[in-house]
Image 1 (cartoon, rainbow, N blue to C red):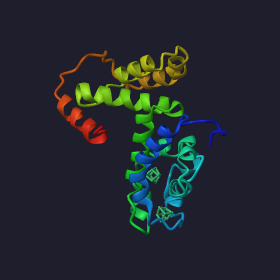
Image 2: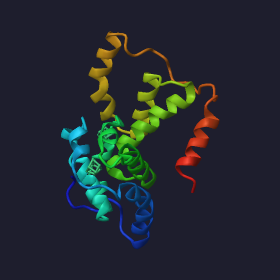
Image 3: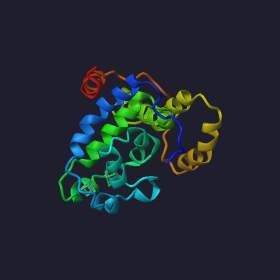
Length: 192
Ligand code: SF4
Ligand code: SF4
């Protein structure tokens, strides 16, 4: 986990807002018996700074700031292994997904890269019904506003192009056919 710095921001209003957002996730985890099966089933656990079991413990003990100091839920690849194996039948993948949504809504600095990566991916899907790799990465680089990031991706991009894995499709506005669907999904995710 990141060192003890303010992740969420100060003020009782912020803490209350976060508590309200975490309450439904906590409710999903109330029956957790801390057996650790989720951690043992998670293919990404070795890369996580806190195991899934640890994350649920933090949630149940109202340590919201520690949850968002960790990158555990950002590394969840939604494989559903933990959900399938949890002896209490808890919706763990959905809980991870909700934590990602809260981090995005709060626009937390330590998740900005993940959030912008995801948003760029989904913007390309919204435009064309599928991801266009070139457009997706262009949108991501533009959102990050850093000349260094594209340079880091250049060797990988060149290798993928040489193998024909990335097509040369330049960014375009798309057809707008999925706009209504995306609007509805946004309303469901964030009714406020
Ligand atoms: S597998 Fe289920 S009961 Fe066991 S620690 Fe994970 S969430 Fe809790
Ligand atoms: S859904 Fe996420 S947390 Fe659960 S096992 Fe898969 S990667 Fe790990």
